[in-house]
Length: 193
Image (tube, rainbow, N blue to C red; front, side, top):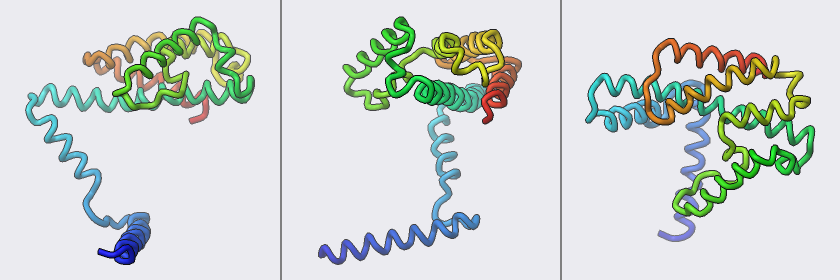
């Protein structure tokens, strides 16, 4: 195959993708269904386990996904507020204990070279419970959005316990699921999501 043949092949592929995207936006399926493929892969991966464990895992996976989004939304919320109010060097102005803890965890991650995930964001190494401490310590930057320090602390403390339960693969009760969903909905309303 010549270079020209390769370029033509790639160009036709790009043209097909552009045309296929037009059909997809119109609601017409082109090619294999990604959702169906993902569902088949999930079924295959869970097949060796009993049905009760699989059902529990799927419930917990949904809750994990919501908590993942919630926790990272809070990190972005803090980052954006502190960048706006304190400037690009906002990380230097964090509580020393929290900053040292996060830097230590980041250094450990940098030494674990086989882990290639995100390592640059210092807030990514701040413990969940410390996020509320940052907001409270910098209250003047957040008081117009977060209802009260008590409101924040009470919810974040309860959510941290549930989050840690989930992180250690323990099953929650349905009432605990509902409380977490309610707290996340409260937070989303408060910050305008």
